[in-house]
Length: 254
Image 1 (cartoon, rainbow, N blue to C red):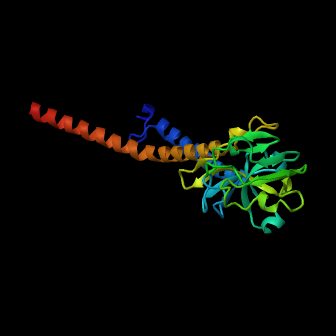
Image 2 (cartoon, helix red, strand yellow; image 1 turned 60 degrees about the horizontal axis):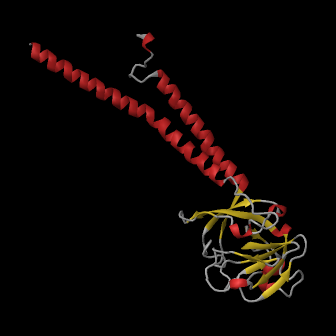
Image 3 (cartoon, one colour; image 1 turned 90 degrees about the vertical axis):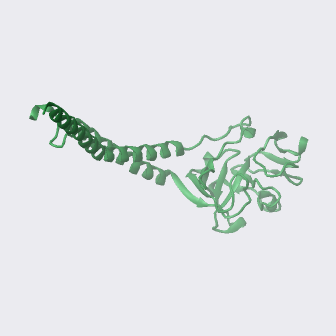
């Protein structure tokens, strides 16, 4: 009967409508997440091991497109500087901003910013944070070091250059938020050692929300698309069981 609210194959009209809605919403989330990610993030392949163990050579990373004015101490940034490597993008950690005096080594062999020792648990080695040096960062510039301090060619290698190895904020094109490959890389944490300095540390970008949108969209698409076949299979199973029960009843009565 038409008033039962069921289609000819036993598939509920409400279920069909909800499954179609789930697929539509899933497509919006899935495609929207990818578009959002493409607008906000730029993928990079890390060219050297100068930032290990935080990020390793050949890691695929997601870097949020930002303006140089948004950079904070502790950020791992992608930048280009002609004195460092022409147009080749490089990846280093920002340890000093304009007006800072960056030095090593202070008490316990730690890097110091304006005389304040900085905890750097991300360093590969457990000895002194660097060889001895002192640099004053010009306004509007950044002092950059690699996490693999023994082998990194960074601001320390350019101390004799103008600006004592610092690069302009305008040289920064992006800030690392996550390691996309290998899959166990995860989010890039903001180091607490810089949090108490003026300006604090930066906030993560929307990578978690983007991944969540893509994952939720994929689940809705798969779930919505699977509803019809699963519902028809269950209906046939119930009908088969009911027909079997009627046959047994008829045989018993006969």
